[in-house]
Image (cartoon, rainbow, N blue to C red; front, side, top):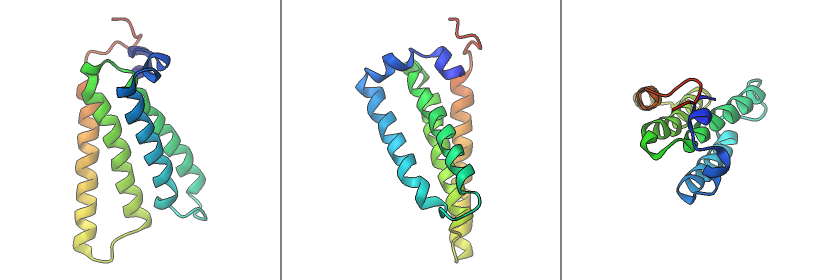
Length: 131
C-alpha cells in the first residue's frame, strides 16, 4: 500500500513500457518458478501459491514509484529472487554440503540486499502518500 500510495498510479505505470515490461517479466518469472520450487502435492503448496502472489504483487507495486525510487524497485525484485532461493533450498536441498552452504549464503545475501533496497529506498516516503 505504501508503494501504491506514493506512486504514479497503476494505470499510469501500465502505460509506460519501461515499467510494464519489467513488471511483466517479473510476473512471468514468478508464475514459471512457482511450480518448480515446491511440489504441487506438498502440504504447503496452497500457502506457497498465496504467498508467491502476495510477494509478487508487492514487488510489482514498486514499479508504480518514481524512477528516483529505483532502489525500492530493485529491492522488490531481489526479495522475489531471495525467496526463490529459500524455496529451492527447502524443497530441493543440495546433496553436497558445500553447495548447500553456498546456496544458503547466496540466498541470504540477496535477501539482505533486498531488504536494504526496500528500506533505504523508501526513506522519506509519506505514509499517507502526500508529497
